[in-house]
Image 1 (cartoon, rainbow, N blue to C red):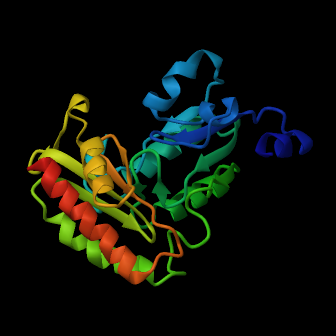
Image 2: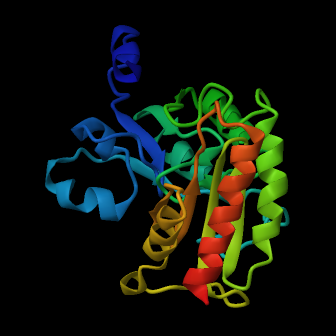
Length: 243
């Protein structure tokens, strides 16, 4: 639609798209072309069209070596560098607002989304908000249970092998690390996320891993008691799996 908009507007040059590292927007050729997760997308690379990339706002493992908020959202400045150079060719910027789900439940820092919107306006680029996973109040305050989840997750954040707990509304990710101080990750062959989820299943809870990250996306209809049970079983499973 973004491409079509510019074509009908007489701006024939705008044919490219800008997306983020760690992005996931679906499994069609077009959607994969603006994705950014090698484990999902590398196989299809010969079929894809070229898109521009900007750094993901992954504060826990910042590829720019900075820390929020002292970084002053350097990742946005890097995005602007791409826009400044290629804005005449870019039809749209596509992002997962507030949380990059499949990329590791990466929660955008305060001010990032608004910054993207301002840059799109500045450089006359359409902003495409892919809210398949983040819509209907899942990242906001529509449901009080989101605040309960945040409160319960605090209990897990101090575990010795929990490096980071990221949460926005009803979307959360628990990143497991071998060394909390150095952020050393578990090796892929250790399958630590898989082990946690298998233990949880034995306890009656179905959750999924994304590598070393435990994903929590409970149904919006969950009760407070069920939510507390979800976090409790997850905590027990992490303790058992990490020793």
